[in-house]
Image 1 (tube, rainbow, N blue to C red):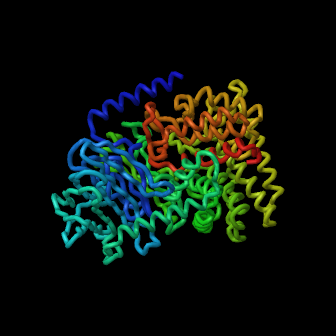
Image 2 (image 1 turned 135 degrees about the vertical axis):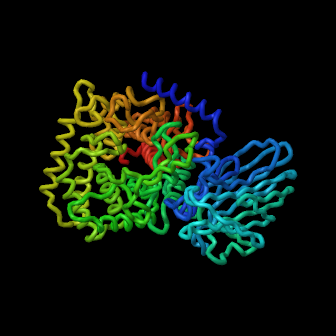
Length: 622
């Protein structure tokens, strides 16, 4: 494949240039912690280099990942000497352990965010312990408020420091510590030594008066309670099959990306991480996509997490209630349901490995993406069947959406990949319109809700026939990306997964062969070939999409090719980072690209593992 070879060469050149010019931690070197309101990325070097505060879609206080000089960070690490770095989660939790192993000793940092039921919120807890030897340690806490656009004052008090941003609408921060703190150039610094079995702790929290963190036993109590919270949450999973550790890690990651106050789910907790190093495909994913959240609900429901599904359904019902007659749903929303997401460029940030522009907000929120209705209705169908029945009022709003689909399914749209090069009549969007009507009809029949079923049936069948008549290319012997195209799209891998067509249908088998020929490289899958696909309005190439690799696995599994499906699946698992986390894409050297961690990839991993495990056990009914 010439275009893949060219892609490899270009990205390798970018990587060489960036490695010479900047000191950075690769995206895959991070773990994630959180408290269901926000998250923090912790590097293997003990540095928190990305954190929005106090919510997922709030401005950053740490963003060294996007600008090593301006972004801000919070690091605890040995002050001198050579140390090997290791990182792992305490099993079945979101408590992260970063370990430093050197010639003169071993030190380890426990990082977590205390859960809200402890009586407070947004408390970032860091505890360092020396296991062996005596190790000098240095701590630097250097927040930069409002995406590093706002200065701050700093006040020193007994055992704590207060960071006061110049903008009054931004929250103040309090840093508590068990060791002496000093102020240097607006940063909090601590330098100390620890011997074997000695510990030191640091707590970063919202400075809104006194809090339980002043309790001398707070750190140990919060650690135990947070540990128990995650262990209890994981214990409710119904998954008992192969690859349980990876499935649990994916579930824990999805849980971290859910908003406890609102019930919404972010696509990823970061922004600006590039799909191509040095390129311009640098988006903000800290919002709730109808598509991604619907897929997340499906994954969590499958694992038995109905509480999260209920919370999202309440959030989704409010969005449907807000719809004006004759208007479609928005593609994405803020966590609280607000619809304004103006896209801006942070010109002062140099970007990850100098990848500019760094964007916040997302102009794709104004796009028309018809596929979101199929994914939404499918998740509602599953929730209504396996969770709890939806209300009549919710059904009334959903019926209006289906009516809108019946009148607009032929419209060109921007598709699942959110192209910015002009709308097309996409195969996947057309199929998802079929899915939305089909699932709505099934809900109406099961609940005996009023609906114009005869008319819906005619439209559903017309869409089905239209796909076979206008999206099939006999020369390629394949379904194509959009009407009149001569290329395939990995989004087609979802067609047998949503039961639009049989995974053993001859037309699907030949389509899968075309995808394998043009988009698959070993176990890695590109979403499309940009030289032949619909123009996406961007320059440069991109890596393989990890979510597509897991869709590919499930297609093989459903078609009955279990040995190959298992082989590809286990190879794809090997591309996770050291903690089992995935960014959106993989570069030619296996490096992670795009926002991190990516919900959609972990959703597809869960689905592929569930289906493949069941079929290996002889259950073909999944």
